[in-house]
Length: 144
Image (cartoon, rainbow, N blue to C red; front, side, top):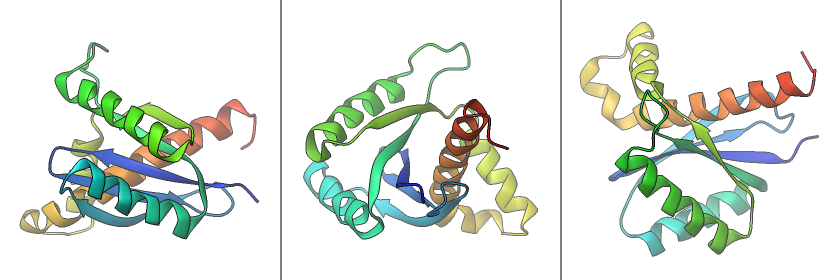
């Protein structure tokens, strides 16, 4: 059994949260955390890390299409440092370019009205980020 991973889609107002299954094969949505302040956000994430027994965090890294660091990516890097300090766990920054657009596409394809995307789009983005990380890790390990 693989240690579970927590996947995060970090934003200014919300954090989408996903978790890997116990085999480390798939990512499932957990919730969308409405941000309050750093202390409260870390407290809430700490509860989730304990609840799911996570050994690492995968944090979406919103780079520009060119690969340059965007202002949001700089905020995300600072948040990653806060996570590392608070939990003493590995935090993997994972390229999340186009993840939100893909999340909206998935929701439209599922027949979800656009007006209802706001509540779940961050969770779907967190799932896409974490699933991409899991797939790449499995691929690099030569596991199909």
